[in-house]
Length: 193
Image (cartoon, rainbow, N blue to C red; front, side, top):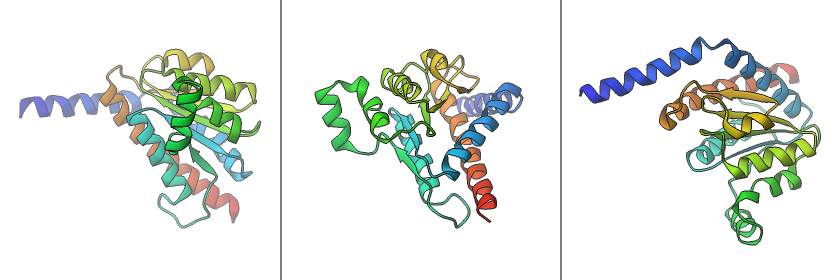
């Protein structure tokens, strides 16, 4: 049991470090505002990631297309890792590093927003998605681990969990995007009244 308790203590520490990180709080609030504006005007909000971050992208999309806590209209959110036919076609025909950027080209718009999740911040396909999004004048939000990796240079808003350990970063991401979804939903309901 000592290892279990040590693990939970490390989880608590990274959450406390997140709680006390003023820059992260400010950037999260900015991400909520730009995404809210995008969705209020019915532009597409794109979400992407690989592996566990792909699952997080699906989770975020499900909460916003469906509902988080309130009954409300569906929101225009697209998870770029959801369609295996598109992913495998793009991976086969163009290379795996293009699987998100081609979809950004297809679904994005100059008033749209993309959220890329990458614990390292170095996923080539997420970086390429941001490069494409910037060409299209989209707002880019990166949710990463400490430092932001290569994504930091392409992110308008960087939300970097204060850890370099993948499982702890993912735990922080879950807490952050649950709050993000809660606030998007609450504020859009208020705006639509």
